[in-house]
Length: 329
Image (cartoon, rainbow, N blue to C red; front, side):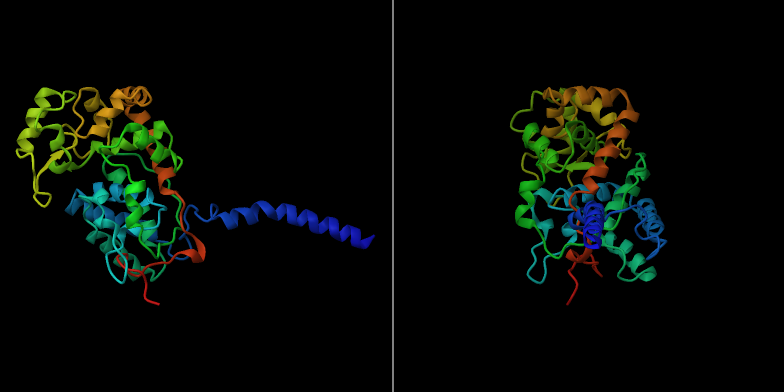
């Protein structure tokens, strides 16, 4: 009789622990708000302070932090694999054509060094990518997004797989939507994330095919004249400083002007214009163009999903001393 009771008790305990065990094994329960509250209480404050200082010195860093999150998290995981330099048998993801124009990586070291001074080998580069993007969004007039932390850093690079994960500006809208859907971002969220094109600038290399030899008929003619002034050659030097701003009206504000522009045929990239021509995305473009709060709401939601894509947690990853290199064993 006693044995029977023990079996029931054991079975009950196992059943109660199963959800917890599953959560632990899947890794989904590892990220949490204020992950560093005990190990490095000032971690998030330090990142915010460094991001803010860098923004006031180099305003375009805020744009870079948002781009980093996208280009890192779309490829396999939010694991800072993007930040690895080519060294010790690793080929950097930065060498991929999909990461053309990415910049300001050197300032990640500024943030990391400040954290290492306060809390050595505690805060991951992956969390720096996530939290700097969060703080960069706010500096650009966007919404504050509560992000969980606890990511670990990748020990390898995924350069060969970058093109299979990061959408290209010339891809079809259906392909772009499917890429985002594969990580849990729905159509509405994808339209919102593309609103990041409200800020920053685009190199002429990515624009000239819409201007030469003939002007893309979906471009506003007057806007095309402006773009030709910015990009006077059909064969621009990728290394030259030849850019056009995504948004001429509020170029450094993360707002819904982007959607107003694409509705007026003033989107820089083919993918921007496809938002209007695709019936799946057009209704969301209209709603976001008319309501900045609606845009910010769905941008926040989608950014959060993106930031939590398949994080490395536990012993699978590392806390890099230098975000550019894997730790020496």
